[in-house]
Image (cartoon, rainbow, N blue to C red):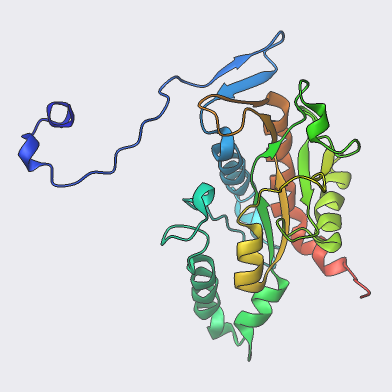
Length: 258
């Protein structure tokens, strides 16, 4: 089948990586077309919002005229199988990228420990989809931690560090939402149930960077056809764009008394 598709002899194919995926295009549905149905919303939806917000927050020279940091996104492979691959978050890609950025700016006399200081002052938004409350299984969520569709990004907390969110990183991320009047939800898994994880703890511990774990609420995660709220995509884009535009200023004003 492959040789016929690509127009070669079967003996010319010496190796392959072949994955089967749903080819149906994404679509809107629901009584008011309020839902998005698509394959691989987890985690292409977050990747789309991150990329579009980065582009739109940096369109014009004046958008960066007062920027004190470096705006960037990182999109990794193999998150669902542990991230321990050359192209996964477990690889040193982020650390190497930040080191090269700092090295390229060293002519500006940044001084000793420039890389370490850059890492300490940086901030990571680890964006991975979140499990929304399923109407048929409400007992799967704590009573006051039930993410709903169309109610905004979900900030994830876990005492066992399955998520990397802290009180400080959650506050900073929520403060940006408050200023822009954007809805935010918070989630803690039931303490008698297992908790998934993200690349947040991998990068927070491996690189040493402040991190908040968040995600767009969705249903049917990991199925061939996933579902999320249309408004949540727009809200997430606005939240990420505001983060790019405001983080440097808000972080400078932040005074944490430990």
